[in-house]
Image 1 (cartoon, helix red, strand yellow):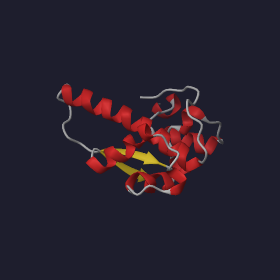
Image 2 (cartoon, rainbow, N blue to C red; image 1 turned 135 degrees about the vertical axis):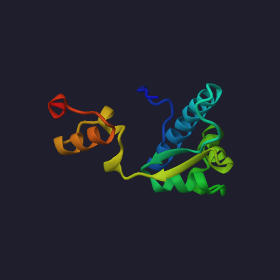
Image 3 (cartoon, rainbow, N blue to C red; image 1 turned 90 degrees about the horizontal axis):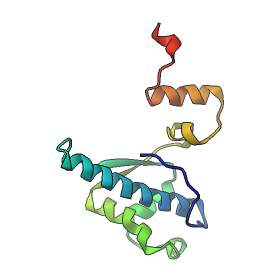
Length: 128
C-alpha cells in the first residue's frame, strides 16, 4: 500500500522520523497480512520491512529505553512489539536502493532507470 500525506507528528531526529514511519508501515503490514491470511493466500509469514536508518532499526530491536527515544509516543512502539513477536523483520536498505523513492523524489536518469527496473516496470521499447 502507498499513501502520501502531511506528517502528523514532528520528529526531532531522522532516527525518530524513521521509527515513526516504520511503526505506521508495521500497522499497514499487519493489516495486509491479516487480509491475505483471511483469504487463505498466505499464513504465518514474517514481513520484511526495509529501513534505511540503522539507528531506527536498533531502537526497534532493543527494548532498553534510550535517552534520545524517551519522547517518542508509546503508540509508535508498535514497531518494537511486532519485531519482538517475530511478525516483522527489519532489514537495512541503503538509501540508493529505496524503491519507494521513485514515487516521491526527483532523481537522476540512471537512478530512475535502476529503480524502475528493480520494481519490474518495463519500457515499451524494450518489449519489441
